[in-house]
Length: 264
Image (cartoon, rainbow, N blue to C red; front, side, top):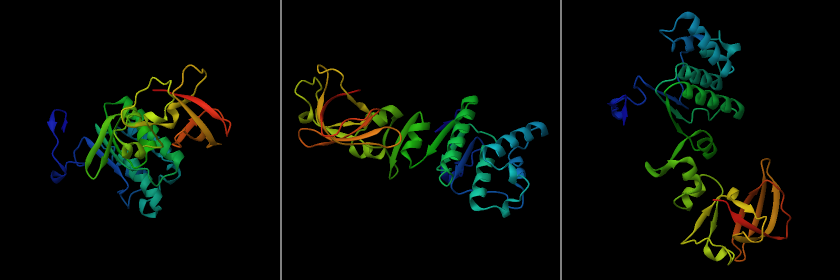
């Protein structure tokens, strides 16, 4: 691995995350216990002129909802508040490489969304690369450009997020990133031009209700249809009793047979 054309040595040399151009935000947080929240942020803004330092600190305080605690010493804060202070310290100056190791795991969803949005916007303004480590597939799919699926220290698949999500190499990878269907050639309608060599791993949102009887790949019997807050989740089955999950924008009548096509 190289940074600014210089080789970055491994963890045994304490350069990850100790490298001056890298920062780590993790679940294991560090704060200056005897300093106020604002002073904790100022500590990371050495070299800034006072006006710019205050402006940056105010922005971070507001983002992390710490304004009312800015004069409180860190030792009097709860563990959750200390975590936010640690995040504030890490984000005070965005480095060239930002390592995010599940840093927002204990925060509520709204604040997590705000923080991710902040990081994304900051990255766009500068020349920063972000490496996000997460067990939440939704986070990786929502914020990453590229995804690497790692298991036991080995990379199972790496690539653009669309390719990793929609073209998983096997069922294990498909399942790690969300719901999926296993479709075989025998499940298809005889009129389909699609040829499946072994098994097709297909996401529920890629199965669409056909508007024309001339263009469809499969006929499914609708068993159940319910709204999950984002879309209608439809449980169906093929003529071979293979269960198929579909995400639909519209409700589909239960106990009917419907024609669908695959939207690749």
